[in-house]
Amino acid sequence: MPDFRFSAGAEHDLEDIIDYTIERWGVDQAVKYMDGLEDLAGTLARTPALGRRRDDLLEGLLVFPMKATGCSTSGNAMA
Image 1 (spheres, rainbow, N blue to C red):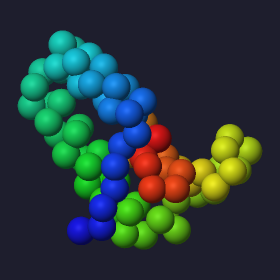
Image 2 (image 1 turned 180 degrees about the vertical axis):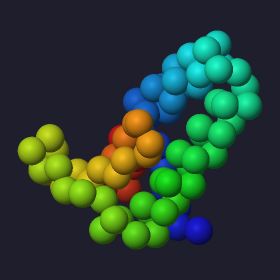
Image 3 (image 1 turned 120 degrees about the horizontal axis):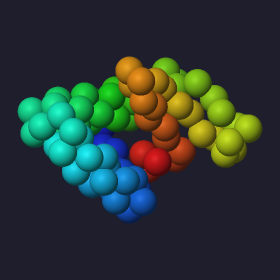
């Protein structure tokens, strides 16, 4: 599987999201959410052209929806 990494800011945001998800919907849902996010990040690392360009936000930024949320990438770091 291709390598990817989450930026430090994204890691911090994910920690907050996971904490909130656990409080609101429980550990099982938090695990499902993170598994899905990591699967999507791997898919985008293998095939970045799947993303939609959003140069209006950041030059070279590609975004790809994940259900009601989004996942974005710029360079090698998931943002």
